[in-house]
Image (cartoon, rainbow, N blue to C red):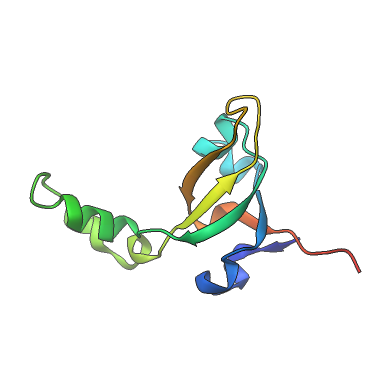
Length: 104
């Protein structure tokens, strides 16, 4: 497996991925609900794009528009797990994913 950060976001579409479960990710939603693997369906909105859409209704802090929040998330169809027996779809940061590579 390779970190998804090593790929441009567009290259991840259609790829099988695994959710990271190390200590750095223990607070992430995907770990708390037990997501293990899935497939990247499309690019999602970055947090700053989402904030812009809500901007008319919500006061948004300026720091939300920093470069860190301008990275597009990936829309992933997660495989079934105990919390979601039928699977689910979720937007995930590339840093939370590993690309499953085929064995030689």
